[in-house]
Image 1 (cartoon, rainbow, N blue to C red):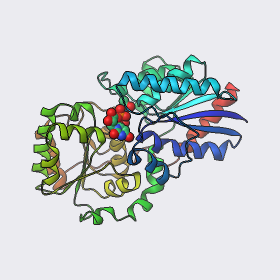
Image 2: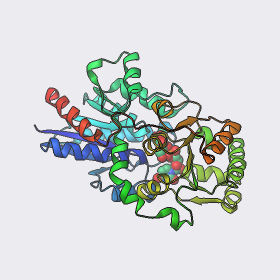
Image 3: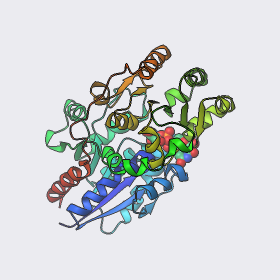
Length: 372
Ligand code: UD1
């Protein structure tokens, strides 16, 4: 079979998820040409290039270099840039693959849909049912426009069906990010990163927070800073700081205080391997990231999630994540439970087995037979 696929990435989590898909396609359908399009939504070395190097991704065929901006600006620039590329592409792509729920995902889906190019969505169907999250808007729009919906967990399939999307467009393929985690775990652990930071494996906490609901309001940031300083008297905390969070901490005048707090280590955003080395050996994780809820579930590491709702319910029902929202008392109580080994255990989830990239490639190939 011959076909051309435009494979879109733009932000950190996309870079992680695309690798197994590209590899699966190459192995199963060598006649399919994949063009990798990097929108440039994330552009700093630690947010972008480092992931390409560490995860052995091919260099992008196209760089749109859109950069940061408001949601409207960023989405519009991506849409415009990707549409221009699609119009000139020769041959025109048979289909476009988009992953996850970032602005690059929805913008490229829109551009492709208007040109009648079928869309394949990897990680379809996740819903937080909270339209205040920009990602929720991105997911709903992208799924509506997609011809092949590849879900990572059963809730994704249920959500898509409930929204009236045709069952024959939906496939449950498992979680492709967990493929990458298992494939890199040994390599990551050999880095000995906790030791380099003076930490003992199994005896530290990792914090990652970047959602606007947690970091944009100065009052929330002040509460957070007080809490982290209290918790760090019990166990050391490592906090790799996302650029958005860094900017907000500086604006709120909290950066120096946290940076000098005994027991807290602030760092730049980490590369994939360094972060996996740290997270896989943590005692506990506090986060607002969707991906990290999934990774901690796969690693059986307790995860306290600072969000009111999750789009990954399986990580709460069967995994190790607990939603604590903004309830600091609950956070501290569960934190103590973990330190005293009273926290729930998770379990290995079906189809989170390291083979999702292969299943995705299989489904894409079958889909393309009908498009061609
Ligand atoms: C985006 C995604 C979010 C994902 C996160 C992962 C959307 C709507 N949000 O959020 O779902 O969890 O990526 O990291 O797509 N910045 C830099 N350097 C960079 C990139 C960004 O300094 O390389 C700064 C800029 O000031 C920018 C801000 O971070 O304005 C936010 O970046 P943006 O891509 O708009 O959203 P994220 O918060 O990263």
